[in-house]
Amino acid sequence: MFRFRNIFFAVMASLLLVPSLDSAAQPDRREVRSGNRDFRKENYKEAEIDYRKALVKDSLSVAGNYNLANTLYKMGDAESAWNIISKKEVEESAVVKGNGSDFHFNQGDIALAKEDWQAAVDAFKKSLLENPGDIQAKENYIYAKSKLEQQQNQQQNNQDQNQDQNKDQNKDQNKDQNKDQNQDQQNDNQDNQDNQDNQNNDQQNNKDQNQQNNQQSNQPKISPQAAQQMLQAIQAKEKQTQDKVNKQKAQALKSRQKEKNW
Image (cartoon, rainbow, N blue to C red):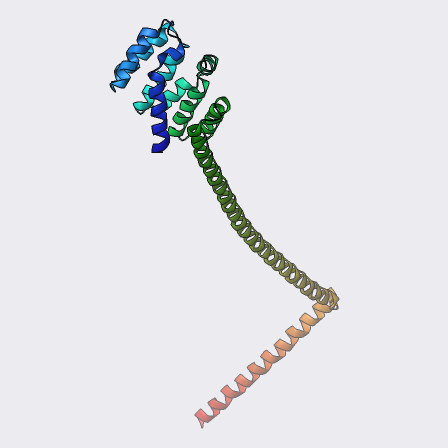
């Protein structure tokens, strides 16, 4: 981390010391020079103000944008620095004016500070295309690429872990679902068996009742005359029995009277 930052500041300082690279005849020249002086004194807030004044005069000023981005980076605001140095029109202007290699180098360093490894790889690759012999750009490119690969591997591992977790969860869910289905099936089978038993019992009861009814219906029927005769015979039998009992009582009474008179 410290290595590419030191490289970044060294490149930045060398560019600030040579503002003529961006054209000395530009209207932003005075503000850019003032900003460079403040930057060398580490008066970064004043340097920021000077570079912003330069951009008011020329919004596409390579020196203004480039050095403002470096100043914001020194102030710890890598995000704002990236927003400036990643402008397409500023990049095109830097390339046209011959500063493309250094511009992309600093662009890559700011991307490294943001841990945007893909943007850093792209920026250092552009820098090397314009200056293949830049050893520092090669080292930073290799560093950014290794960090990008680590990030991609980590993302793939996380994705695999999530897939495994989802697979395990689905397996458990299917297991529970199958268990519930089996239990429901068992309950249904038991209910069906109970219903079948109840139906069998009802059928047996109906059969018994029918048999009883058939037996009763098969018994010989008595005509009204026969029933009347049977009733009279029963009554006559009862009368005979009652007369016999009364006769026995009368004899017993008479016998007791004789004994008493004697």
